[in-house]
View (cartoon, rainbow, N blue to C red):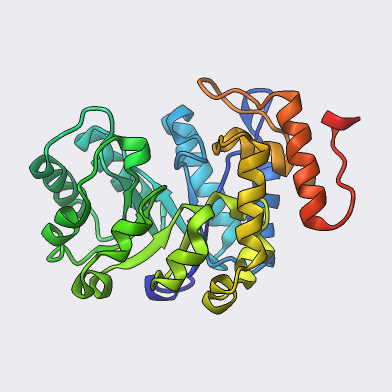
Length: 299
């Protein structure tokens, strides 16, 4: 890995570019190069924004391999390996290690709503199957399961569980964490709309899909600038408003299609944004960039 987990501050949840139903590797290389060039510290592949749920096992392998090869140690490459099946998560995590991932992002199991004891057992099983650093993905907005502080307290003895990604609406929960849990883990936010407050409360950084759109601004943002109302906060808010509150891979790809002329293609069950939403995103981007931004959707 190009840097240790303690040095990671800016991490992009990388979207997976598709063209005619297949992963477009030339655009993937361009995306990795953009992250490196703008100073981003790391990327996560195959998470919810990378549409990992819609990727076949061989596609996940090729995607991770391609990103590692292109990154060539210039930034850290984490694989999102979490599912709601412990055995499957262990298998994906071991495979990521075999391919050479620098670490893994593992979600709290979703849909099945296990008990706290079951979630603790899940993470112990996964972490015990690898030497890779594990970042726990805590997003009750998506998993409908809020284990919070009790889960973190129960995993402190597992040395390779090194960090937490706090999801949407988790700012207050993070703020209330006791000092020992703040010190024990690295804390990252995926909630772009509250990022300045998260950093002001002592957060270490972010794992953000917004890094696909504005990597240069996220890489340049410091906790001091964020607390003063950095532009990236307005970027996130403007895109959320333009997308009518929707924030998923389709919205991110609609924005990157406008800025970088990349395909906006997604896989079911996601669908591309409506033309009026794409137009609103284009106008929001134009306002943020201070100059006209044109897209095929507006042509």
